[in-house]
Length: 177
Image 1: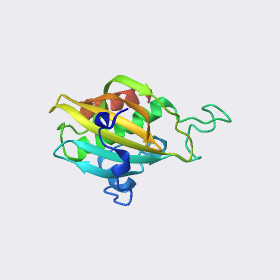
Image 2: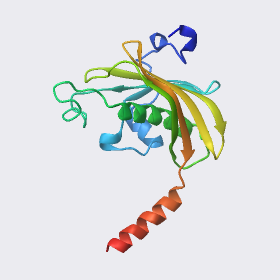
Image 3: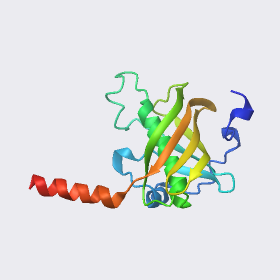
Image 4: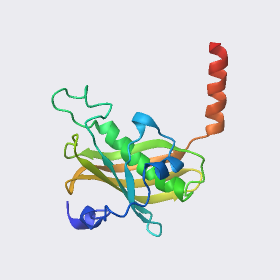
């Protein structure tokens, strides 16, 4: 991939400049426990709607034991979740969508190019390409391991009507009682 196709060259990122650690990420993202897929945010450019962060992949990940025993590969769906969490963090922190919660709205042009294994640092970069406040945010993303692209694609985020979801959950709990 040529440098002009990069959202941001990962070699230019300053990993010592942590903008948001896990506690700060939690203020903007609802995921907890095994579903937290970001370690830190290290770059934000609000003018161009670009953000970068990373996930330090450990040997204790929930998928290591069962996803390709004796050859643990980070599942593609988990890589996509990490990218979605980065995009959601940026959107929520800066209230770009105007929603209490952002959810997956779709994926396009996803390609997996290199494996991600325990011990790797998956560096994620997202650049928003379209924003319709209250409707949708479209983001191009790239994930790098050792400065090579491991995953890339286009992600769509949509507002989640949490009041409706909570109402449906309460009804389900009541019917189980």
